[in-house]
Length: 497
Ligand code: AHR
Image 1 (cartoon, rainbow, N blue to C red):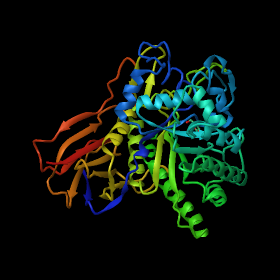
Image 2 (cartoon, rainbow, N blue to C red):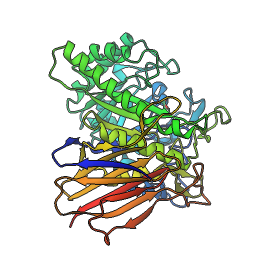
Image 3 (tube, protein in one colour):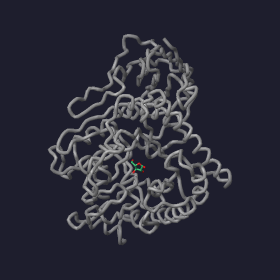
Image 4 (tube, protein in one colour):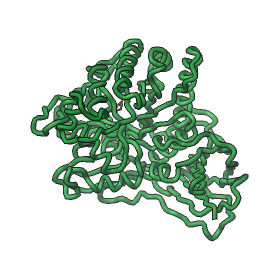
């Protein structure tokens, strides 16, 4: 059996984890909204048409933040189409995904849904086909109390109190030529600066996310961040990163090593932010918003009827190895919590999502639901420098990949310590020894294991059995060695007793 070791001390803190790293994303895309979170007439719908079965699953994860309304969708969106009397709202051609947008769900419905489910909104403005004027009007509509055109318009639409949206994205993936209103770094940097200026004039308490590169493989990566940040450093608070992985070639070992790419991407993006900081002799620290991340490839190439309403698009059915990849990405996010302050699993329901639904039928948890749930439930507190000694292997694209990857989180208020660990090895167990340096009185209480499944096992509406299992450890209070099965996600929980 292979062996690994982690050494933990309360003194070795990386950072307090920002709860917003457990965020997610709902775009007007496929069945994320219509048939996902919103389905009037569904047996489980409340009076607003919000699906309670879906809300129950979201509440289990405790999602603190939901980005909305896109994604590529936002770059052609007129937010005014989605407010006011529903019967007067226009049906529009939605060019990002070639569908028809009915606009029966919009800003006020989303805010109401956030309140009902217990999450906070992260709004994106359209800096593709529109610009600073529409962006500042939307901030006024959402956040200004009353007595002006847009705040009174909101009140006339029934929302008497401001929505008080604290976090705003300045467009979406503006470096990509697939984006409506795609821009060069200079064009986007100037537009973002002017939008940021007037948005913060309307409400100085808001925080803004500048679009970074759509992924680290973009030809303009690096230059894009440096140029755009140079143009609006003082006005923005975060730079975005987007990262999706795939296993098209069925090379599991290589797939599970891809979280190393995410690690590199985060570290490089942080360096670029600091390069601009240095150049400007600024004291201000720009942090990172990984506001789209996931596995995405199963649904690529799926056909649907052009201009149809809420078609089945991007409905990836996730298998067990995808859950391990998601677990590894979560470990990477937590390890980099000194710079990554916001992260959104893309997306939340039906569209590349942990939760799936049938129109008029069931809602269920996909495999990737579970590591996300565990990280959100037990990953709050301080990320600890997890001194990890592990054996290593090479894959097609990566060298010296740890057989085990791990991060520990200390929740000082609850007096709990949680070790998250993935054994990437496809055949061998790994004996993980956990060396607690100064956690006097802490005992292992539970080992949650997600393992033993075929790599390609999935959950469906009919068969929902690819689930983790819990092993209570009360009988072995001093046990500090844990067997990690091959291809496994592990959550080892310690508590002061
Ligand atoms: O999440 C799906 C799409 O991926 C988003 O609309 C876009 O921002 C990204 O390319």
